[in-house]
Length: 445
Image (cartoon, rainbow, N blue to C red; front, side, top):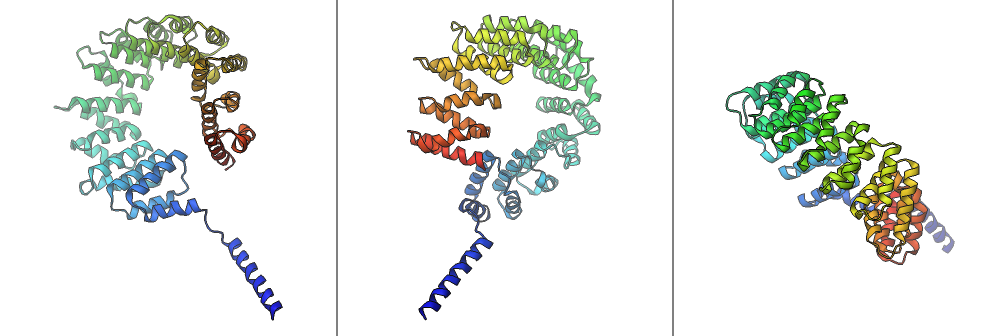
C-alpha cells in the first residue's frame, strides 16, 4: 500500500510539472501591467502609460486600445492617444478621426488630443473636417485644424489655407499658424504669398519670421534674394530667421549671406548663422567659425560654432577642435563642447586624441574638468562613446559609474556587458550594483 501511495504521489508531481510546463503563467510584472490596464483606476493606467513610453514598450498596445474603447473618461482616452502618438502607432487613426467628426458631442480636451495624435502620425484621416473647421472658422479647433492640414495636406488644402489667410478679419495668431503650416507642407504654390510677407517691412515681425522659415522649407531658389534682403532687416529676430532659412540652400549667394550673418552685431543672427553654416556644410565658413569659437563674446555663439564645425568636418576642423580641446587655458565648458563634437563627428584619429585627453583628466586631482568632460560625452547617444563609458565604469567616483551605466543601458551597449556584470556582482556601492544588475537585464533582453 505504501509503495502504491508513493507511486501515486510521484505521478501527481509529474502531472503537475507537465501542466506547469505546458501552460506557464505570465511573469508577475506582465500580469500586473495587464491587470492595471483592465482594472486599474485612471491615474494608475496613465502612470503605466508613462512608464511604457519611457521603455518604448508597445507590447500591450492591443489591450490599451481595448481600454480606450470601453473607457468613458476623456482624460484617460486623451492619455492613450498621447501614448499612441508618442510611440508612432497608427492603430487609433480611425477612432481619432471619428472623434473629430463628432466633435460637438465630445470634450474639447479629447478632440484636441485626437487632433494632436493625427498631426503626430501625419494622418490624412481628418483633412476634410479640418478644412470645414477652417472654412467655418470654428474658433475652438481652428488652430488644430491648420496644424493637421500642415502635417498631411496637399496643394488642395494649401489653397484652403491661402484663402483663409486672405479673408477679412483674420486674427494675427491664425495668420501665423497658416504661414507655419504652408512651410510644413512645402507647397510650391505658396511661394508668392510667403515671399510677399517676408519682403514687406510693414508686416509684423512674427509673420515675417515664420514666412522666412516657410520659404527655407520650400527650397525654391527664387527665395534666396528675398531671404538675403530679410537677413539685413531692422529686427534681429527677422534677420535670424532669414539667415537660418538660407542654410537650406547651397548657392554661392546664400552661403555668402550666411557668412555675413556671423558678423551680425546681435547674438540671435550669429547663432542662426553658425547653425546655418553647419547645416550647409560650408567649408568657406570654417575660418569665421574658428574665430567665433575662440573670441565671440556670447557663450551660445561659441558653442553653436563648435557644433557647426563638427557638422562640416574634415581634417582642418579635426585639427582645430583637437588643439582647442588640448589647450588648458581655454574655458572648461568650451573644451567640453569640443570634446563632445569630436566624439560625435570627428575622425578615428581625432577621437583617439580626445580619449587620451579624457583619460588624463580622469587622473587629475581636481575632478572639475573630468566631470565636465564626462557629462559632455555621456550626453551623446552614439557607439563612439563606448570606450569613454568603459573608462567611466572603472572610475573611483560611484556617480561616474552610475552615469556610464545609464548611458550603456540607454544605448544598449552590449560591448560593455562583461564589465557591467562584474559591477553587478562586486561593486562596493549598493546603488551601482543595483543599477548594474538592472542594466544587465535590459542589455540581455
